[in-house]
Image 1 (cartoon, rainbow, N blue to C red):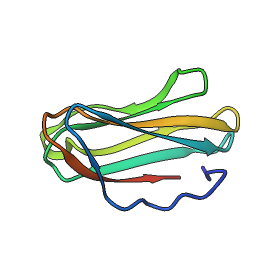
Image 2 (cartoon, rainbow, N blue to C red):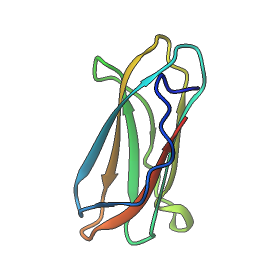
Image 3 (cartoon, rainbow, N blue to C red):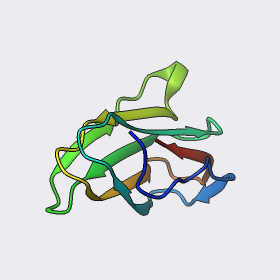
Length: 102
């Protein structure tokens, strides 16, 4: 899906161990939405997407050895609105990642 306001892939961001970084974006209704994150392989990351009521509408929190911090969460928003995207670091050390949304 297209974001209501375009957001290019962000530069690398650092997330502390055992912490959460949140982003709020507007997504268009009835269009496929995708959030992707790719880390530096130092810890396991997870991505969660919540609607305006706090319901989890998409997530990628499965940890496989080969892709423990390469993530993708996909959904189709039923209405145009704000969605909260969380990147969570499950490790005890920092991770550096890039985040993309469309």
